Image 1 (tube, rainbow, N blue to C red):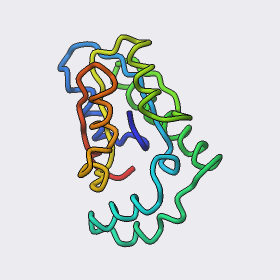
Image 2: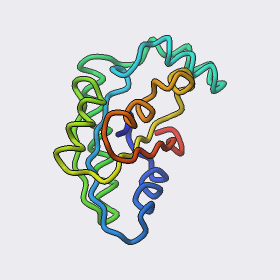
Image 3: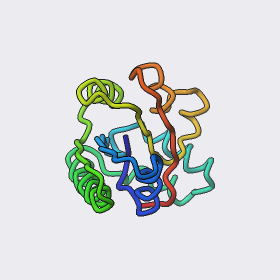
Length: 151
């Protein structure tokens, strides 16, 4: 589960987690504009010392524009994963991300879930971030990773 396009560092990290074992990735991406309200995102930006980003949270695309950007980010991520020799397929999340994640885990009989996001301090503090909530919902191990750099 991701929230933006994977960077090359992210791809290298997740594709080497299991050594030479073949891996199939099933990627869910929820466009950022659909995830949380602007206030929480701005607070996270301030906590990270990214004041310029906090000021620009009101400019975050939402609706169809966010969906279009999400589709491009998903395609870039899937291509990058496939170039490593692994299989990868994915979809955008339209509704609640954790319900979509639980459904996908059941469909593909996933062995584990990797949640790769930027830090979200407010949500993490209250254990309301995706990884914390997924641990109670999906029935498989959940690995929480932070993106290596901005995409």
